[in-house]
Image: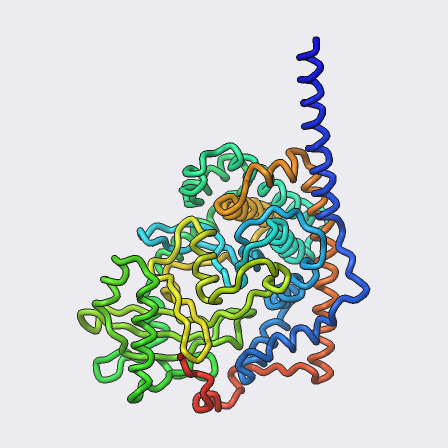
Length: 473
């Protein structure tokens, strides 16, 4: 009898623990209520621009002003400042840091296969798993805001449920199986068989895999270069693409930095890049949130003019999450991005590496547009958007399971729909907060506090070409 009594008591204790964990999870993901001392969003956005190239900021603000979702993409710092002071789960993973739906997509692995995964890591940092979940699910709430309330709720719950069920599966998988798991065309077909993804949605995703296959290094070369006297060189279309001089001293400095970068690669990639030499150099504006940070492009040539490769050299600065995770030891920002990407992605770019310049700037390097594709969710039907939320939820769970404790996270969020409900309540409320911030942003533009420009109307010669801002080292 005593053994039975002890066994029942242990079961009751585990049930009580799970119940308390679910209650904690619901409290963690409850409706967002801004604090009374919340920082002014416009002041915060302007302050973030102080460490960026001033001439390029109007492009950033112009792109952020295009829609509520574009604003959300470019204002990760606001959400980080809102989530940072709140109580958290204490369950640490390597966060993407900016896991909105636009930062998932298809890309090529080192073995030339295409997979679907998280694909942006500028803000990556170790932190509580829920910050990524809240960022991702809120992005779907914003994407579905103009659709029916029923659609928005269905999409949000689908993403949360997918994260929860996928994490539960990874909690019982071997560590090796979790590490090797990939979302590829075969995985998406399995989703179709389950009825989650409609035929039109599957057609869109299949089209994406096909489009990704065509976006190889030569698609970038054809778009970004012209042939002059038998030699390829970057086009000059400022301010979006600016060809920079490789005058005496500059090429040597870039070459020195390039050699240091190669030291961060696996030996076989170093041997491969040793066969290439730099033939041209430029700067290319990319994305939304990243605009204003330096983003160079390097044209490399191998055996002949038909053997070309384009690498992107992107500046890394402090993650927006960093102020809220003070216990993490400081490190090179570019190494943080590179290591974070390697920890999170199922497979990374063969040329992903990093370098710190003597002048204090930090850069990570990767191949430009190597079979990369992201869907246009505005063209998705309600059912397809719901299915896409499921795919992203599963991908995020896999990313977290690689670096965190899947069993602990799964136990924390529980196995019923209480988590889905709590995440829904948070996402809807935070989407409203972001909408209010977006309105304030548009008012600041109208008042002249924030300047926006059409890139086509900007002066064709950037003063930054000669003031040292484009100094790689």
